[in-house]
Amino acid sequence: MTDEKNFWLALPTPFLCLAPMSNITDSAMRLILARHCKPDVIFTEFISTAGLTSPKGRSKLLPDLRFDPGEHPLVAQFFGRVPSQFFACASLAADLGYDGVDINLGCPDRSVLRQGAGSSLIREPALVAEIIQAAREGARGLPVSVKTRIGYSQNTVETWIGQLIGMKPAAITLHGRTRKQKYLGSADWSAIAHAASMAREAGIPLIGNGDVASWQDAMDRAREAGVDGVMIGRAAIGNPWVFSPETTRKKIPLEDLLSVIIEHAGLYQEHYDGIKSFANVRKHLKNYVADFHGAKSLRIALVHAENADHVREIVHDFLHNPPASDSQQE
View: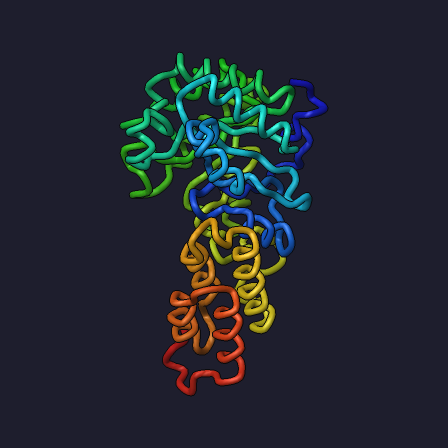
C-alpha cells in the first residue's frame, strides 16, 4: 500500500467516522449525511463475503455497494472468514472506486458468530492475519483497516491489539465492549485509551467507538483517550447533525427537519424500490422526530408509512393540521 492511496494518513485529527451498521448505513442514509452534515469518513453497512462471491448473492448485495461521489472518502466493510472471499470482495471494492476496505472483527450478532465471522475471529488471530493479507492483495493498494472489540469474553486489549498491530492494518477501530457484552453496560474508554497508546507507537491510526452521543462527546472522548478519530453509530440514526460542531437536531428549523425526512424517504425508495422493504427506512424517519410539539403523533404516523409518497402526505398533513395539544411533545 502506498501512502498516496492511504487516505487515513491525510485526515486531520481528531476525525469523525460513520459506523457500519447492518440495514442502517445504506446508500440513502449515507447520501443524506453527505448532503447535510458529512463526517470525515463514511463506512457502508457490513456485507457478507460469502454472499457477495456467490452468483445469487452478488446480484442481491451489489445494491448495498452503490454510492454517490459526495460520500468520499468511503470504506466498504465486509464480514466473513474465508481469505479468498475477502480477496475477491476487496478487488471489487477497488474496481467500484472505494477509498478503503474494512474487515469486520467485532460484530457480536449470533447469526454472524454462527458463521465463524465477526467477533468470533478475535479467537483466531492466525486466520485474521491471512484475511488481512488476502484483502490487502485484492485491494490493490487501497488501505485495509479492521474494526473490532476489546476482547471476546473479557478485556484482552494488550494481547489482541498487540497481535493486530503486528498485522499492520491501515487503521484500527475499537469498540469499547467485549463480544460477551454485546451492547450492554458502558463502553470501556480506558481500554480504548490503552489501545490508542499502543497503536500510536506503531504509527497506526486508532478510532474509538462506543456510547458517543454528540459532536462534543466525540471531541471529549478523543481528547481523554488520545485516539486519532471517533466513530459514531446509533446516535446518527435520524440525526445527521450529530457530526456538526455548529448545530444540533433541536436547533434545525422544523420545516427544514421535515424536508429532510421527505428527502430521506424519497432516496430510500429511489435506491431500493423492489429490492428492500420500505419498512427498513422507518427506523430512520421516526428517529428524526423528537423535541417539538406534536412529535409523538407524527412519529406514530411515520412508522406506518407505506412509501415515500405516503411520507410526504403525512408530513404535509402535519404541517397544515398540527395537533392541538402540547401533551404530544416528546
